[in-house]
Image 1 (spheres, rainbow, N blue to C red):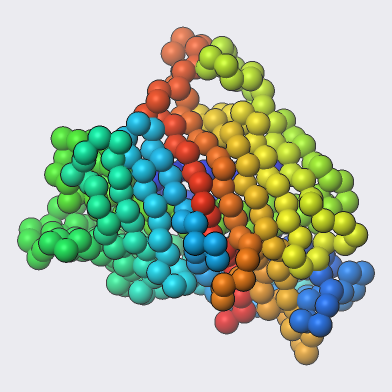
Image 2: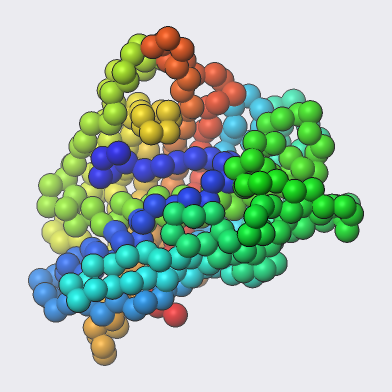
Length: 360
């Protein structure tokens, strides 16, 4: 992939996140940021920042109340309501030159989302249910989580999903366990209407957790390009080229463009448009089209010790801004050099969330 591309994989519990938090930290480590009385770094200040080995991260609903929503093909629509703050932690390694390596992450116990599912046709999945982390979910970089648990709760069902060293165990209302080898195997049940509803609901809950966290990291990934964008706006890059006949009406090679909507120096309150024009990823066989708007950039440095305090888009206490989606992800299939897209493999994402990475 190119530097502006990202992996957007709705409702697939792969849990394999890229090293994207490096971008969040490198922009401030090289002197980018806003000025003002809130401790934000002053443009031109070349003092190297102190970067801690551990940071919190938080995701919350937009202050407008518009929920992150995905319409999955002709099957169903899912809205994600974040209960207060969705919290986690990041572990980092930093060398003498402020080069940062992402080591691991954790989703904290009590992290919760409420999902509302509405089928295009009446479906047993329809309704609202909670997904709650009950044991801290831990994962090393580029690996599936090694431990943790969450519950998927309806008025009549509690499904306990436990991440084991050798698989995933599901227990419905204290009954006999059902075991899967991987979270990806579990996620395959979502659109399989031959499976029991509680298994599909649990798979959707796992996919929702992955989707929310992966979107957080995908957006964090672009932060290391923002200072470059402010100097060269707009920045455009070609996407992968179809090695055959593209789907009907799709360009043979699309483009990604990031546009800075501010002026002067990168500073608090700035907005960016991250646009995908029929951008195909050969690695994922996915076609991305639409815009992710990044509103109300924020960056704060503790001037007492020149340590990065926080960075992100939007705020945690009802401040405006965040990450807003008007975006489509389509899986492509190839047969003898000809690519097609099934209507059931098109996901339309809208709404959004605010995100902050913050010193503990």
